[in-house]
Image (cartoon, rainbow, N blue to C red; front, top):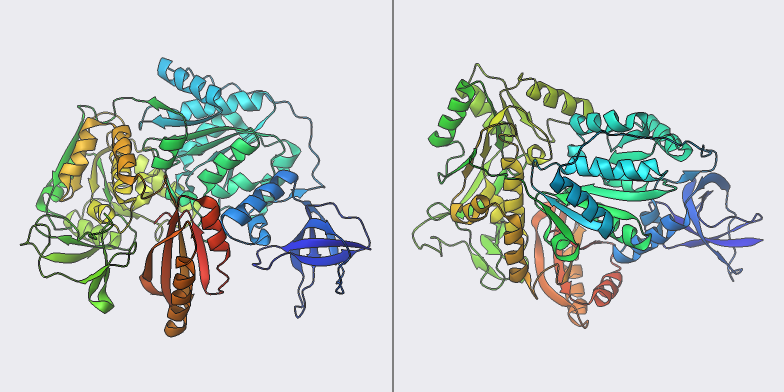
Amino acid sequence: MNYYEVAILKSPLEALTFQAEEEIEIGTKVEVVLRNRKNFCEAVVIKKVEEPTFKCTNIHTITNFFYDEKMLETAKFISLYYVCSMGEALSIFSAFNKNFLEEDLTLSFDSQIELSVKQQEAYEFCKEKKQALLFANTGSGKTEVYIKAIEEVLNRGGQAVLLMPEISLTPQMQKRLEKVFSSSVAIWHSKITKKKKESILQELQEGKIKLIAGARSALFLPFKNLQIIIVDEEHDESYKSDSKPRYHAKDLSVYIAKKYDIRLILGSATASLASFNKIPYYRLKETFFDTRKKIEFDDSSLDLSPKVLNKIGQTLANKNQVIVFLPTRANYKYQICTSCGKSVECPYCSVSMSLHKNDLALKCHYCGFAQKIPDTCPSCNNGVIHNLRVGTAEIEQKLIELFPDKIIKRFDRDEIKTDNKLKTVLNDFNNNKIDVLVGTQMLSKGHDYHNVKLAVVLGIDSILNMNSYKAREKALSLLIQIAGRSGRKGDGEVIVQTQNAEFFAEYLQENDYAEFLKEELEFRQELYPPFLKMAKITFAHSNGLKVKDELDKYVKLLKQKENIQVVGFGQSAIFKLSNKYRYEIILRSSNVKALLQALHSVTSPMATIDMDTVY
C-alpha cells in the first residue's frame, strides 16, 4: 500500500493523507471522498509519505490530469506568501492533460513591423536585461515592441503569454495579434465559454496555439515551453485578485520569470512605483502632451458645470466625439472642502481620513486616529466639508436631456457585461454611431478611440483624497491614461474638474511621470511600500460583538510580535457588507519573514488576509 498527502482543490483544509494500491506520480489530480460528504472532491497528490498511525481512506479515482513541477513549486510559493492553503493555490492553475499529445509543429511568423530607432533601442534593452520595464508614453508604440519580442520567441519554438487588464482585451488588440500570429494566438478571460476554454487548452498542449493573450488567469495555463511573459498596463490594480488566493499577477510574473529564467517585459505609460524602483527600465518617450493637446482645469463643485457643458457642446457641434470619466461605476463619494478642495488629512499619516457616518466621525485607517466631522475646513478655515456623490447613470441621463439629438451611452461594468457587448459598443463608437461615452476606469484601459477630441474628467479629487498611501500615484496615473484617449489622431482637449489643479498641472504640463515617481519614492521612504511590506487582515461576521472581540484579541497578539508594526485597526471603510460586520488590522514591516510568520499565526475563521494590500 502507498500513502500520499493530497491537497483538496479550492479548500482551505491542510493536506490530508490517503492511501492507494498503485504508485501515483506527484502532481497527479485525483478524486477523494471526505468524511461526511457524499460527493467526490478534486485533489492533487503533493507528497508520498510513510504509513501513518491512523487508518486511511482509499483514493477513489486517478485522473489523466497533472500539475508539473513548476506549477507545484509556484503554488507552494503562493501558499506561503499569500497565506492560503496549497489546495487554494493550486486551484488557480489549469492542469496538463495526458491525453493531449504535443505535435512537432514548426511555425514561422513575419510581422513585417519596422521599428523606429527608439523602438529598436527599447526592444534591444528588453532583450538584454531579461526582465525589463518598458516605460512608454501613450502612443509611442509599445505594442509593436511586444509583437516583435513575441515573434522572435515563437519563431524559435517557444510559447508566449501577454497579460492585459481584463477589460483591455479589446477587439483592436485581438485583431492586431491575429493578423500576425493567425490561429496560433488564443484570447483567454473569464467571459469565454467552458467549451472554448477546453478547446484552447487542448490546442495549447498540442502545440497549435503558441501565444495566449489574456487576463491574469492566463499566467496559470499548462505551458510546456514558456519563454516570454509580457504584462501590459503593469500598473493596473486589476492584476490583484480580490478573492482567495489574493495574489498579484504582475508580482507573480516577476517571481516566475526570475525563478525559471524566462524573459519578462512589463509595460506602461504610467509605471507603478514598485516596478520603477526595482526593475531596469527603458523610457520610450514620444511627445504625448504636445502643443496639440490642450489641458484645462475647472474648479466648479457642480458635476456638470457650464464650462464643461460648453466644451461638450462645442465638440459635438464640430462632429467630434467625447468621453466623460467618473471614478467608480455607481457613484463616487468623497469629502472635500467646497472652497479649497482639500480633504481632511490625518495629523499622523499623510493620508485622507474616511467618513464614518454612523459615528459622525472621520477616521484614519492607518493609525486609528478619529475626530468629529469639522464644521469648517481645517485647511482654509472658511469652507464647508461636503460629502459628494454622483453616478454614471445620472451623468448619462443629464447629457441625454441636454443633447437629445445625440447618441449617449454608458461604458461601465454594469452596462458592459459580456464580451460581445464590449465589442459592439467599441465598434459603434469607433464607427461614429455613438457621440458620447460616459464611463469609469474602463475608459482608460488601452482602448484606441479614433475621433475623440474631448476627454472630460470628473471626480478625480475623490481618488486623490482616498484614504490610501497610493492616492497621489493612482490619481495622476488615471488622469494621464484617460487624457491619452483624447486626440489620438490630431488635436485633442482635456478638461479636468478638480480643486487641486496645481498638483495635476505640475506633472501633466511637464510631461514626465518619471519625475513624479522619483518624488513619490522620497515621500514613501521608511513608511510605505516599496520600502516596507504591508498587509491587511479583515474580520467579518454577522455578529458585530463577536467579530469586534476577535479583532481586539488579534490586535493584542500581533502587537506583541517583534519586527512588525500594527499601524491601524478599526472598522472597515464599508463597515457592513452582505450582512456581515467588518473590522480590519493593517500591518507593516521591513522584515518579510516576520510579517509572514505573523500572518500565518492568524487562524480565525472570521479572518481573510491580504498580503501586499493595494489599499
